[in-house]
Image (cartoon, rainbow, N blue to C red; front, side, top):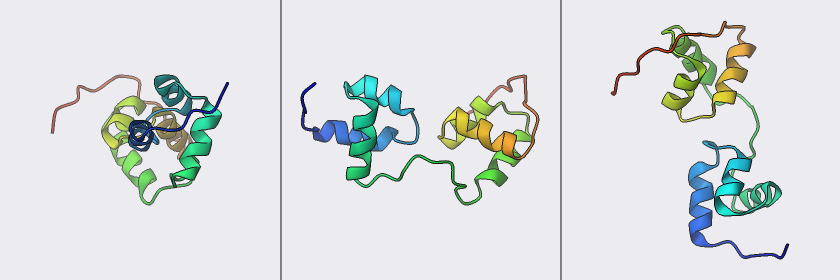
Length: 106
């Protein structure tokens, strides 16, 4: 595979979807390798994908969890990945909400 310079459209797509989609998903959508995505993200100054606690995230997830929302619904409201919501919920030892609650548009 040969090197192909990044376009400004690809940069914009990566910036918009960096914490919203998985790296493999982004890679397949723009025709790049997952490793290439990681390298370029670092080069353009995007923060590393890790599970450090963003300020107040656990409190917000706990509050939304208490309203009987599922992990997927909480993730959608917060604009983060479902797996991250699941990670924090398990970290806080909260049970899984099994029934989906009808979301009402704000």
